[in-house]
Image (tube, rainbow, N blue to C red):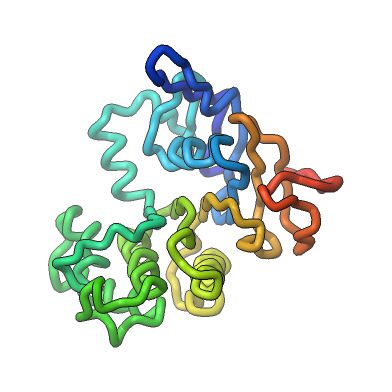
Length: 257
């Protein structure tokens, strides 16, 4: 089932006297339950596309359709409510509050939404157990490793049972070993296995990375260049199809709707 549609979407920014065309007429569909990876070199429009798909930005022109509703018709308040209830974000730099424990940080989206302390505490303890941090729930961010802090970030992104989880370079601050662990954890979150086999729903994942090594078999890969999608394929496990910048370097199998 189609969850998000982009129809001839463009995004432009004014930088001084220069008009930057970040996204140039992209039309794609994202299906519910997909794991979508956005690849491309720096400046290709990856993060902008991620923000548009997550409803964090509005396009300069074109339409973004969520569950059949055009987001351009939403007020700022309606967009904020949609993001709060539908979107979870995993940040590259974690953005945990230093004065709050791992559990308190995980609860934050539910606290903002007005969920009672009893209800949010039970659910968020369960989430921390799913990411392997139940015994670290009372620790503060400065008492956690980088990988553990990102696991808290993943639990926090799941707190509101988000339909879509967006992640912008979620392993950028981690070494290769910890980065692999985090990608495997997010992958299991989408597939409903491994750590996340007890999860109650299957969120759609949209992830930005510059690292081809983060790809896993079955992920849908959108490769961007100069604000356009130059390739849309299902990753078959063959890393040789991409160069080090994520650009296709061989004949691809095109994604079929």
